[in-house]
Amino acid sequence: MTRTPLLRAAVYCSRLGDYFFQEIADLLAAGLEDLGAEVARGSETGGFLADVDWHLVVAPQQFFFLGDGARLRVAPWPEGVVLYNAEQPTAEWFPLVRRLLTRAHAVWEADFSQSQAWRREGQRAAYVPMGWAPGAPFLQASSVLPRHSERPIDVLFAGSRVPRRERFFESVAPYLRRYRIELRLVSDNAFLRKDSPRRMTEEMLGLARRAKIVLNVHREAAPYFEWHRVAMHGVGQGAFVVSETATAAPPLVPGRDFAALPLEKMADALRYYLSTDQGRIESERIAAQGHRTYSEQCRLAGFLRPAVDALGDPSRRSPTRTRVEAAMDLLRERSPALVPGFH
Image (cartoon, rainbow, N blue to C red; front, top):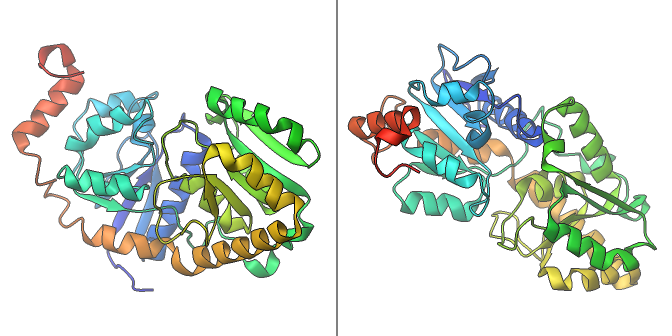
């Protein structure tokens, strides 16, 4: 792996945010270290760190709006702030990410389609999906994974409790009762960091490594590829992922590395994969290929290398942003009522 000497970066994540953003921050820090960068970790309580070239803020919609982060939002930012976005475009928090873009040097995006959309808008954007990195626990070696047929959990799903998911699981409950199901539908508040995020990571990865099937059901009808659930907690643990139809997520390919289908067909798919010999053979084959693709083609440093190279000089901000515009953006944050067009 080519090294990047003399690169100093700080990776930030809100202490008050969802636990899985801490996982993503840990992963990005490990990926940057894999490139040879010197990496420090920070949070909203300590503010921006000194003596670093780049400030990578994970989940800016939480970092700059929860707790002490609100103070950082309305203060001047240092040069070299990069936002890492994994928020879905249809989510209620997504406008907060967009609101911060003009003050940042660049945006790194987990979703392939959205990274292209940012670039079409003139943003300095890069596609940085959630691959794996040495030192991060999200790729389990195939040699130590349990055999697919011997995994005791038939179906695993963990995610926020929203009406759409509740309706789906109620509809398939009569069929799934005959299998061992691990269903974790929790309120959004339950994902906030009230407990040790690393303990939650260990628990969730332990479940995924014992599951034959990891389900991915979107919280909203709009398609989106949830890298965190599908890759980090799915194929990376050797599970067979059955996902609702999602956006493109190269290099992972539906039908080869995981199954993707409309929600209304998911119950029949589960019946096929769990109850027929051919379905069980197919699910084991796809799970093995998905794990192979993730381990061979999704090393995070491979995604980070072009993203880092494209950043250029931290003192040169996005070409779409002038100093006057930056000053107006800061004024909007501090006194929105004084600046027309802010909402």
